Length: 158
Image (spheres, rainbow, N blue to C red):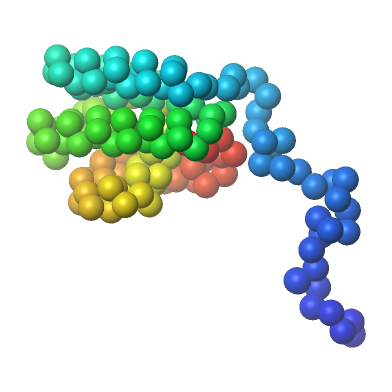
């Protein structure tokens, strides 16, 4: 029996040439997103929200995801999506959320799950936990648990 616990062996130290970084795991066909681009999208989203076009604002936010961006850019977009979710919930009945989720494509529904998880882990999202859980419930009701599995396995983080 070996004197060393095999579960504690740092494999990356044994073969440093085979070590993959987080950036190397991302698909190469996704262009990087700048803070200016996300600020412009956030302005368009707020404009849609102020004119009562909630579905359009949600789709716009979920279609312009900054997968390859710095943390500040990702955080700004997460807060913008959170603002959209709050606006929709505050101006509509909880039962209407299902209609908003059904109006999204499968890809947009998966991105919505990613943002729900991200916002649930943030301090501002924890203060509005009930709202995010309403959205989560209605989204999983429409998509099934497959969207949760795709969230857990997708390397593209929001």
